[in-house]
Image (cartoon, rainbow, N blue to C red; front, top):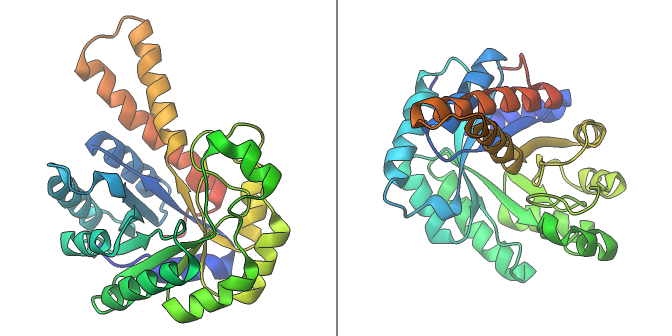
Length: 282
């Protein structure tokens, strides 16, 4: 299918109460597994590269592979930069052919976050690229007891309307008790905070740190207004577990081990697609 921003699909997801998955991918096996899952289940999706992959020797080649696979797909798949660290990084991703970019200024003072996000949005919108930003700060699961206990980094609902109005951002990642990586302790998603943010803006809301959140919490978050969910760590752990198990049984060859990565991504991505209710929505 022709490459396009994920934004119109997110708007439909928001209206119909399901969430589109973003899968952070890193090589052709991961890409093929995720794309097969999306095609199996007739779901729209987002293939993402994390910002630390930009600037590597294979960045352009991997992006070209993503674009070629997406254009050959029978379901809509967008290509997104995840956690862009600067205006320049977002522009690099746009030049490479990404359909959407995220600028993550969550560690900056609010006014600086607004200023750079606004500049990214203005440049991206001029060429039809969608923009995500983060308000509040989604921390790391390894610090989760401090994050949850002190409500550290949670999105301030009073700042949401100002941020959206001044930046023109298309998608907003929020911090409501979610965290990146493996959670130390049980995740606790603040659905009341989500409801307050949803009440203030119509912008599609994004949940990062999806690895480890319970099925019940996912469903409640989607019903509460989340329409895009990012998954990475869960996929990497599942693929690693499959490879480690095969190696423990005596598998030694690259040709034996690498197909297990593709299979793990296909199965686990399929699980999340169905859990988020995106199956059949292409």
